[in-house]
Image (cartoon, rainbow, N blue to C red; front, side):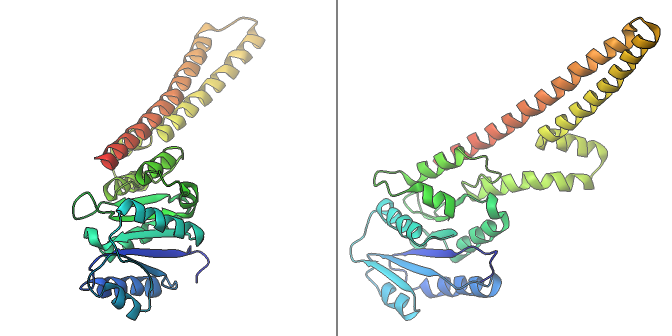
Length: 283
C-alpha cells in the first residue's frame, strides 16, 4: 500500500440486496485496487435480509456481519462506528445500499478524502430514497475517535458539533456544501485568468482577509514612510510640518480600518457558510 494513502474501509449496509450487491462490490474493488492501489477492505452488514444477500457476500469472499432481524438504522450505525474505531482506520466509508445510494457515492467520497488529505474531516451524501436511510458517509480517523461509543449519541449532531469546533477548510456536510467550499478555494487561482477588475472583485468577495489585509499592510507601509519623512523634517527644521504629519495619521487609521474590515468580512463569510451547512444538514 502507498504510505500516502490512509487505511480505507467500506462498510456496506444491505437488506435484500442480492440483485445489485455484486455490481457495487466489483466496482468498489476495481477502484480501490486499480485506481488508488490499496487492498480492498469491504465489510457487509446485512440488516435482516430475506434473500441470498449474505450468502452472495460470502461467495464474494467478504467479511459479513448478519442480523437475522431488522435493526434500527441509528443502532446499526453506532455498531459500525465502534467497529471502525477499533480497527484504527484512516477513513471509514459507510454506504447504505438500501437507501438507494451506490458504489459511485462511496468512490466520490473516497476520492475527495484523498484529495483533501489532512483538511478532510467528514462528508455526507443524502439518502436517495426517503429520509430514513443513512445515505453515504465518509469519516476520517480523528472524527471517528472523537465520536466515542455513547449509546445515546445522535450521530449527525455529534459530527456537526465536532466540525463546528474545528477551523476546517472543508465543511463537507453534503455534496452540495462541500463542492461550494472547494469552488470558493479554487477561485483564488482561477481569478488571475480574468480581467483586473474581476480579480479585484473576486478577491474582495471570496478572500476578504487576503485582499484587505494586504491593502492594509500596504497603506501602513506608506504611513511608516510618511512618518520617517515627518520626523526627519522636524529634526532638520526644528518645526513640525503639519501636512505630512496629518497624512501619516490618516494612513495609520485607514490601514488599521482595512485590516479590521478584512477580519470582520472573513468571519462573516465563514459564519454564513456554516449557517448554510447547518440548515442543509438539518433540512
